[in-house]
Length: 312
Image (cartoon, rainbow, N blue to C red):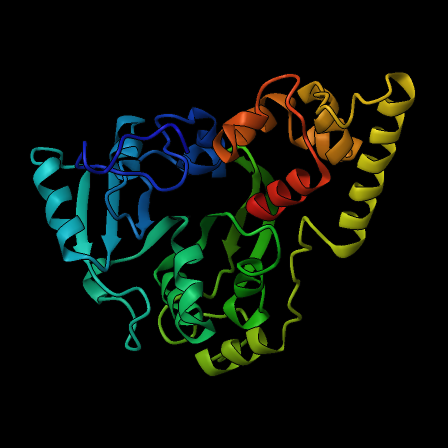
């Protein structure tokens, strides 16, 4: 994301929005954001090589537990945090069929920053088991915060079924990087959570929860480049070429360039430009094809189509 060191240069690595580089995340990730004290037990789900657990401790949290399936990550975290009693670590499989170890205890707050985004790639069975297990270790009225890159309902559908016993109390739009929009979901557990009867529905089982997820409608993200949009772009560029030729015959054929701000306005709607600033567009174009990043570059409809395909 441009705010992290190369993993070859550091023993820590945040794939998605480090708290150090994005202090505005405190609004969602700190216990105080959810009416909890700093001595609340906090579970960092899929901590990996991230510094999130340490950053929480630096913010005053006194009981933070980081868990990950990779024993290497946990061993490195333990070595990195010797002498910090507010931090503890455990290597475990979030999606274990038998649930999470009893010795892990119960938590007031669970934080997932991109872990479910990875787990959903393994399919709903694995993702549902991971969510169910995390829910089972939350105290009554405990909170799960999920930071996800998915703009559609891919992750939200996992936390909404009644059998799980969560209420999604907030859903915040989140700008991630320069192109993709994500979400922060804040889920509060009902009073009957824990153990074998996780859900708010009396006697709800994992099978019932899994069935509710399967029945939930899927919301497919709309692609940035649709056939209709491509046709419209090609028409706009053809009209631009015609205007150039009328103003200065032969200018278009000679490759007359266009200010990047005009290209930005040509490709994106006003609503899209309000979310995707010109400065962000310029950075993405420079990464996509440097020759197109300067004012006066000779953009074509093909260039616009290739850019949208590369960034959608």
